[in-house]
Length: 212
Image 1: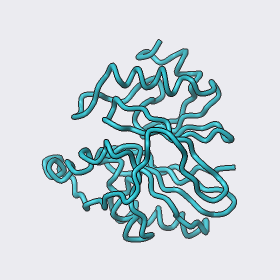
Image 2: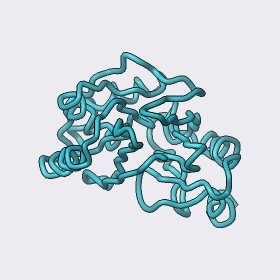
Image 3: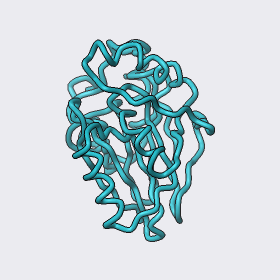
């Protein structure tokens, strides 16, 4: 069984997730820790839970989801893994971060890129890759079939969807991604998004004003 710990970090109130199982190996997803207090809170949890970080995954590479990539690399030697289509998004950050008043420590680039389908594994667990572009050019979600949850990034939110007005965004593509790649998951599937509260696939099918 995979356990999920959520942190909400940085001025964008971004959800950072740690996934771990009984082996104490863990995955760090979309690290957004920004200041010393957030970094300390994160390290304190990893240490107190006795976890061993083995994977750093990014759903996509907008600044709020990668602010902690360098910190994770410095502490645990992990380079991020994401789909190669997100690399230009990552590489564009130093060009706009100062204008947004954001301090950005350069993220390392991947040695391993994730495909549009397949799995990633840690401990005794694995996550299925779900390709869902639209909010960003090559956005990935991560699905656990045994535990029936989705780490959804900025694709589907409680009663909302990801914005598509940023470079590389495409509204029609996002709607298609949700309907064809997310809504095929079980209605009971719990969605842990990149911002805000969790929801379920079934609830969003019935109630999401952007999708009904």
